[in-house]
Structures are given as C-alpha cells and as structure tokens.
Length: 207
Length: 207
Image 1 (tube, rainbow over the protein chains, first blue to last red):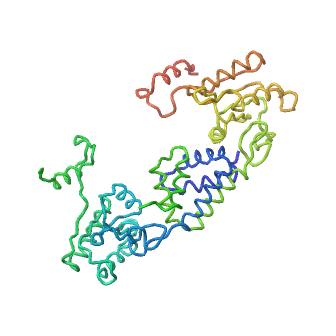
Image 2 (tube, rainbow over the protein chains, first blue to last red):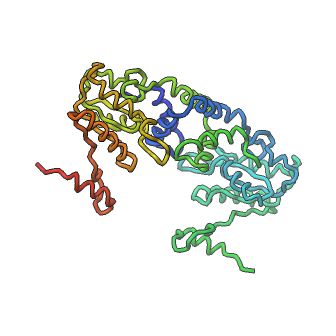
Image 3 (tube, each protein chain N blue to C red):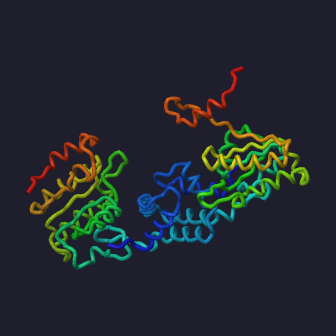
C-alpha cells in the first residue's frame, strides 16, 4: 500500500522541523486527519501570515510588530545597558522575569565555525556599529554591555569575540557576562564538572 | 514586551498537536521565522489539502486516495483474512513488513470507557456488519479474524469485546490475537512482568 500523496506531503513538511523525526511527523499528520477542516485552515493561515505579521527591528534585530520594536521605542527603558542574546526567544525568556530594564541586541545565531557561521553571518557587525554610533544617533552612550549568549562552546566563543573586539575600541565600556553556576533547584551531586568549576569561580560573598 | 500576534497564533496552533508543549511550540514557531516564505506557503497548502486529498474506505475504513482503498480493491489479496487494527498508522506499519496479504479493518480508536468511547464510537458495528454480510456482498466468507489492537489495557478490552461478540454469532470463524512477548532485541532482565508472563504463555516449540 502506498501512502496517499496528500499525507506524504504533510509528513515531509513536518519532518523538516527541528526535533521532529519521521515517526513523529507521521503521528502528527495522522492526528490531523481527525481534526475539522476549519482548524486545518486556521493552522495554515497562521503559517502563511507568520512573517507578514512580524518585522525585525532595525536597531536591536528583535522580532516584533513594529520597527523600532516596542522595547527600543519604550522611553522607560535604560538606554545605557545593552544585553546581547543569540535568539529572539532569549529576549522573551529574559523579559518574563521583568527585572531587566535595558535594551537588547539579538544576534540571530552564534559564531559556529563547524557550521560555517562566522562573525559576519550574524548581526555582529551591526552590534559594533550600533555601539560606536550610539552617541551620534541619540540612543545615548551605552555604559554596559551584558553578553548573554548561551554557556555552550559556541556561545562562549561568541562572547569572547565580542569582548575582545570592543575592549580595544571602546575602553570605558563595561563588558559583563551573565553568571554561570548551578541552576536553582539543582543538586551538586549531579552537576557536571564544568558547571561546578564555573560555580566556584563565580562565588559571591554572603552579606 | 508582548509577543507579536502572528507569532502567538502559530504557537497556539502548534500547542494543540499531541506531544507538543508550550516550549516546543515556541521553538518551532521561532524556527519557522528563518524559513523562506515559499516553504511556509507549501507547508500551509499541504495542511489545507490533507483531508481533500484523502478518503476513508467504506469497506475497511483505512485512509487512502480512492474508495474502495488500494488494499480492498487489490485482487491479489486474500479476502478470507481480516486484520483489525486501531489506527491507519498500524496498517502502514504492518504493510512495511510486506508479509501479510489479507485485508484490514481500521477501528479509528479503541474501547476506552474512561474517555467515554464505547463500541459504537469506533468502527466496530461496521466490522460486525461487514463480517456477517461478507458472503452476500461478494467479498467472500472470512475464515480468520486477526485482532491486532495494541497490547494495552484498552486494546486488550477491545480485542475481548470483538471476540466475545463474534464467537457466538459466527462459530466457524477463527479468531486470533497477534502474539505478545519479548520484542526482538529486548533484554529479559529489563522486561516488565506482564510482558514476561505473556512471553511464557505464548512460548512455541522449537522445531
């Protein structure tokens, strides 16, 4: 028995998504066979409208409905701090806490030589330009740059690259890296070596 | 910062799928932001056309492009054996082996009292009718019914229900249940009690 073409096509569409293998793609497709047509249509239109309804901010490269985005155009936010993240989802995660009141810069990736992604393939030149031009375009002189790339090999390399480039150019810019250590709720017994080492290095005095 | 509406809508569509939680839905949606528009359009159209390009066979209730389906209309297949399965995906799995040459009957579910699914909510009445009417409508008298519902609580209950109903009605129909035991590549040490018990009960003489 051959799989009907309409089913095969949808399976292939699902398989292209990250983390969805052939079996999951089959399961999702056959699940959708039981779903009413109007729900399929609504799913389809939300896919088609995804990019039409969003725009990338020309200042921080976050994804939003307007340019400049709601964060960059918010007069309440502290323009002297910029937090560098890899992906728009990282902005969402940091905003959920609601504590951080500065601006962002979304790289849309990380330096990853194994996958042929160098500094110019992500929004890094734009970060350097933004910082050096900041006082000119009215966004105010940035005082601190928080590098919040992921604590992975590539994220650390990206952080190193940024700090090395900016330290020489703009000596009075404070460059920081988000704290690395044990996540809340973790168990020292099960923590890996690197995390423990970072946690020891990043220890704070109890006041 | 509020999530753009277009993104929120797609996240909600993904969240409705089985096995996809809020985090995965976010990840998939933000991944699709990097995908070219024509791929989004093709994904969308394959969703819209899913049900238009498929039909449920009126004989065996499998999903295919024609009615009767390619299996029911295949003259090479043995019309005297019917294999009962829960879902169309089970037909695909059994067909992949290529050994089974009989027909199927897809229930599109299982008897599941906890979720208010009784025998009449799935294609069980149609199975009984099909078997009793088989000699009349030219499909030939079925000689064997293989019940291949899943070896779960609900699958076993469904199998019991089918065999009880048919044994009294059609006494010379052979009713069988697919073998249950250790899967190939398994380790007895890690097998659960029920599987081991079934494997002992279902032991075969070595010839």
